[in-house]
Each structure stands twice: as C-alpha cells, then as structure tokens.
Amino acid sequence: MKGFYSIWLEEVDSRRYAALRIGFSILLLLHFLWLLPYSDSLLSNEGISSSNMSDIGFHEITGGKSISLFSLIQSPIFVSILLLSAIVLCILSIFGKYSRLAIIFCFLIQLSIIHRAPISTTGWDSIITNLCIILIFSPLGTHWNPVKLLRNQKIKEPDINFPRYGLVLIQIQTCVIYWQSVFQKMGDYYWKNGESITYFLLSHHGRFQGKWPVHFHGLFDKINYLTLLIELTLPLLLWISKTRKIGVIIGIGFHVSIAILGVNLTLFSMTMIICYLAFFPVWEKETKQETGLTN
Image 1 (cartoon, helix red, strand yellow):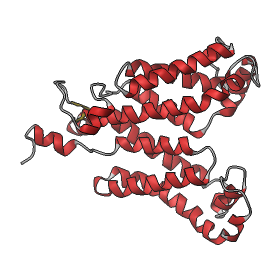
Image 2 (spheres, one colour; image 1 turned 60 degrees about the vertical axis):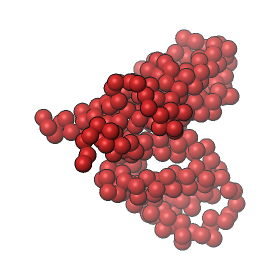
Image 3 (cartoon, helix red, strand yellow; image 1 turned 120 degrees about the vertical axis):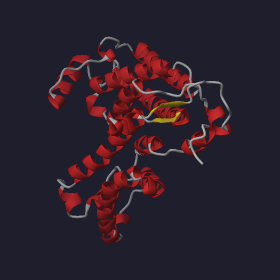
Image 4 (cartoon, one colour; image 1 turned 135 degrees about the horizontal axis):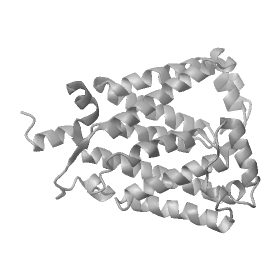
C-alpha cells in the first residue's frame, strides 16, 4: 500500500497541475486555430468527402465504428461555430475558468475530428486525445492563472496540494510514445539502414528544399541512429530525478530541431514539450519548506 500511495497518491503542489493545464490549453488553442481554415474542407458536407464516405474510410482504417459530432452537424457555418466554441473555451481554461468543461468539450471535438476526417489525422492528434482523457479525471489547479503562477502569488485556497496520479499517467504516456516510436522505426528499411533523415529532408516534408542533404549524407546517417538513441533514452533521463534536467534540455533541443527542419511539425514538437511539465517538480521544495517538512 505504501508503494501504491507513493506512486499514485502522494501529494504534489497544485501549481504543477496548473502549469500543465495552462500549457495544454495553449496547445489546444493553437491546434484548433491551425485547423479552423481547413474545417470546411475536412469536416463539412461541402468538403472533400461526405460523412458516409468518412464513416466507411474510418471503418477500413481502424475496423471500428465512426462516432463524430460532425456526422450530425455538417453545415460549414455550424462546423466553424463548434471549433470557435472550442477556441473560446481554451482561452477561458488558460485563466482557470470552465477548465473541466473546456477539456471535455475539446476531447469530444478532437475525437469527432479524428472520426470524421481520419485521413487527415496527424501524430499529435492521437497524443492530444489521450492527454485530454487523462486531464478530464485529473486535478487542474484552476485557482492558479498565468499571472499568479508567474508572479508566484499567495492564494487563499486551503488545498494547495493534489494527488499526483494525473502527472504519473502523463509521464507513462510520454515514455510509451518514445519507445513505441523506436519500435516502429526499427521495422522500417530506411531507419534500419540509416537513410531516413536524408530522404525526409529531400522530400516535401523537409522545410529547406534542394539537394543539399545529399552532400551531408554521411552526417545524416549518424543523426539517424542518434535520433533512435535519443528516443530510447529520453524516458529514462526524464524519469530519474538526477538526470531529469538533462533529459528536458535534450528533449527540448530534439523537438525544436524537428520543428525547424520539418514542415507542419511545430504542433507535434509543442505537444511533446508540454508533456515534460508532468515531470518537473518546480515548486516541490518550496511547498515542503512552507509546510515545515524540511529541516
């Protein structure tokens, strides 16, 4: 029981949840703003595919049944209203207002997008959906807003600590993402042979077009394997308290590089960096000192 308590129910400073809520709400806000210009084409009855075709496509891809709000609401105007509603709720959630409602609503919208337009689903779509599920049932530290958090103002809330289970679930999710990525890449011919980075930069996914990657093929072969090594070791560096800062620095550098070199990968990099907030006990020592738990 002590082991179970220490892993899942040990109390942590509520500001950790608040920082995670604020970061995730900003991520959702940017995600829906990015999607808004394409909503008519992807989600409405005037788009590239009908609702029935999307249902069939979703079944062929996943084998499951499509359940989407956009199968019921198909007018371009109402589709835009749904997305705009999500954007407004994200803004409110950043300041600790209606945060639980915002995350539940954004989860339904996000799930509906994946089911209505499965062919447009990106890597961060699935991650965001999973994080929404975790945060729906987690403390959110809603008595902290960005101003109070940055200024470290005192608050009158009696419960300044919350059980850590939500943070632990996100930590586990982050580790699974990295290790699953390595597992999938090891089955790919180009990753196994060290050529993936070069071909990626030569493709339309590369931000800087041209034949320049060919001249650095030897270097990119080494970076190919370095990428696998980083993804393999990052979960361990993040999980161990003594190496956590190193893991955060390497992880941020890794994902910033991905965002710079790849097209439309900024949101993916932001999604993974936001997950790091679940690892970092920024205020723990301060809280222990205030409650007299340290010498």
